[in-house]
Structure formats: structure tokens, C-alpha cells
Length: 285
View: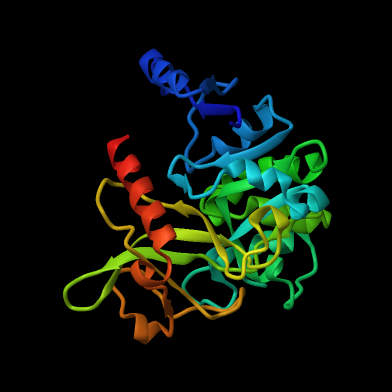
């Protein structure tokens, strides 16, 4: 079992910390009291953590695997940092702004834009990542600077993409999953799919610690905000990173998106059961 630190900006009470301690987590308050808008607790928590190697998890992350496995991957041992892509890339006209070539932060940081590099052309997920702080202290410090300055917080929607941008500036090593997230949700009576969360993956056949799987591995679900039963099925998209899918939030028809329906109950019964159990645990928490 991995040691856990639960960081907060002085908003938790003693009984919260006692409840966390009962499940093995240590309550940690940020060393500098203040107001932390737009998710700005992330960087000071990472930098203040007693851990050299930090697996950062937003509170709305649910792992579907043992997260300790990530520390043992060849990708992490080689690169010292693991990242996952968000939904949006530079090919989108409505979203994905921080991945656009003309974005102001890229110009201020003054690094080259490589159209063939997904780290340039696709936004990163900032709610789940694994970092070696000693190996990557320089880009982490730059990420903290970007996240703690009001101008950058405004143009990056909080700390969105500060890791991606800092890693690009320093040409730091890092692994980025080549698979965009899928959507977890369920079908309603009219055949439309309603999304409840994102699901992120590890590629097929890429790592011995995953048993060199023939199919991608679903490793965590993100953005469940309210109780309910909605983790019933998954759809994924064929578009490569940097391109834009046809998905634009809300109810969708899978065939209109050109998406792939997993049909979990028939084709992935183990994953279907895992999602159901984890969502029930989430609802009871």
C-alpha cells in the first residue's frame, strides 16, 4: 500500500483528518495560509510533499488498477514523469486553447512548436500524474511559477497545462500516453449516450508490469462529481492526439461521433464489474 498525504488549504477540520487517518492517509495543511483559487493548491502541495516521487491525484480520481504499478513501469524508470492527455488538442476551434500554436504562454516561454509532437499539440490532464521531484525540479519550479501568477492563471484557466508547458520549455523527459481519454457513461431510452466521467488508459502491449496486454488498459476514471449510477459503458475515439473529435459535451449518439462503443457487458465483463464496484464505493463514501 502506498503512503498517502491529503493536502488542504486549512479548510479541513480535525474530524476530517481523523477520518482520513482511519484509512491510512496523513492530513497535511499547506505551509502558507491563504486563498487558493482555481485549483492552485496542486503545485504547493506537490512541492511541499515529503515524497520525492509524487503520484498526484485530484479528489475526483478513481483508480481501476493498483497505482503502485505505475512506479514500476519502464516508462517511468526511463523518463521520471508520466502524463496523460486531456480531451482537447490544437485541432479544436472551441477548446484546447493552451495547445494552440499562437497561445500567448508559448510565445512568452519561447519554445519551438512541433506539429508532429503530441506534447505540443495536445493538452495534458493535470489531475493525475507521476513525477520524480529531484530529477525534474527545474520544470516543476517553472510549473509552480506559472500556476501562482495571476496572469497565467487567467490565460491557462488555473493551473491547466502548466506541467506540459514547463516540460516543453526545459525539454525535460516525460512519457505521455498516446491514447486520448474515453467517455464513461450510459445509454438512455432514446439511444443517446450520456457521459459521466473520463476514463484514461495505458497502451496495449507496452509494459511487462501490465502483462503485455493485447488491448489498452483502463487505469483510472476522472471527474465524477455527484452520486449516481452512470459508469455503465465506455466509448472511445479514433482521432489521434492533436486532432479534434466531434464530441462537444452533453448527450450524444455514438454513430454521429464515429466513436467505438465497448459494450462492456458483453466484451469486457471484468472491467464492467470493476467500474460498478468502484462507483458503488464512490457513492457510499
